[in-house]
Amino acid sequence: MVQSGENQRRRIVSSVNFAWLLPNLLTIAALVCGMTAVRYALVDRFEAAVLLVALAGVFDALDGRMARLLKSSSNFGAQLDSLSDMVVFGVVPAMLMYLFALEDGGRIAWGACLFYTTCCALRLARFNSELHDTPTWAANYFTGVPSPAAAFLVLLPIIASFRYDISAWASIPVLGTWMVIVGGAAISTIPTFAGKGVKIPRAMALPALGVFALIFAGMVARPWDMMIAIGVIYVALVPVSILRFSRIKARALKSADKS
Image 1 (cartoon, rainbow, N blue to C red):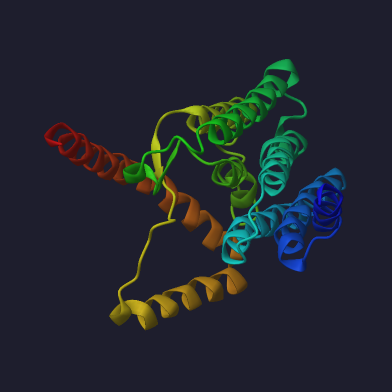
Image 2 (spheres, helix red, strand yellow):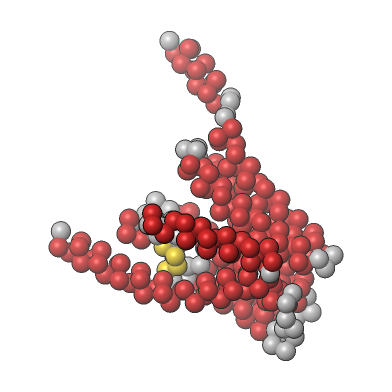
């Protein structure tokens, strides 16, 4: 009986189904996109590099949701996703910014890149360590700016340069300071919307699809303008997120005191 049990466990471990592979394939696709973005940046093809980072963000948003949908979440997938995020949203944006504008900035500019990358590592480590400790009422909020959003914000000056002349204000000190601010936001305790618990009323389903269609059309017709608008809206929503989180926290604490 013991022998047959060991054989059964060996057969289970020796094979995996496609439902387990698919989310991890999406994570690997994100990693490949991020590394290829560096290759394009090295030959001054920054538009292609930014688009690849954006595509990596799409893959990163899908892999976890796909794993939950297929009920194939695993510790291996979580660790792979975290390592991929560190490279794609921590290392790659810093390298793109350095190659784009900070290469002649000396040690201080390089220090800003190192600071941002380190902050992403710290933010991911905090997320992994606190993943199972988040109270139910705070499940719809991240602590600090998540690494994909931080990468997008860091790359905003590059995106803006595709449409506008940013030489008047985007000096090396300004861009380096921007990287430090975004890195600091990543490791801060600022609550930001996670979007996990968003529910759309049935009556608003079609209008919501229309809005998504408008956004996608904008991404096709004017991608850089749309990305800039999304970045501005995200930053503008941070104070709203802080206010809503403080109210939800106050209600949760009040309920806990009553009980």
